Image (cartoon, rainbow, N blue to C red; front, side):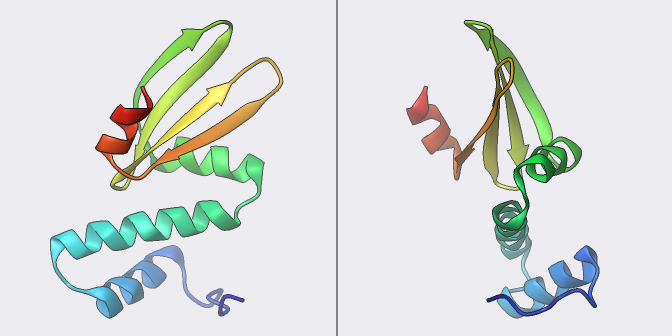
Length: 103
C-alpha cells in the first residue's frame, strides 16, 4: 500500500523523491523515469494513454497491417502505443538497447 501523497502536487512529490534519492542531474532523470513508471502503473488504461500523449515526446509512427504504432520517449525510457480498430496496447522499453532488440 502506498502512502497518501494527495497533499503534495506532482511537482512537490518529484522534488521530495529527488532530494531523497540524490541531487545530480543523472539522479533527477532516474527519479523522473521511476516517477513516470509509477504513475503509469497505477493509472487506469484510458488515463495511461492520455498521460503518455500529454507528457511524452513523440518520436515517430508507422502503420502495419491496419494497425498504427506510435513511439514515445518518456523520461529515459520508451513507450510504444499500438492502436487497431477497437484496441489500444502499451509496450514499455527501459532503454534504447531494449528497444533495438525488439525490432
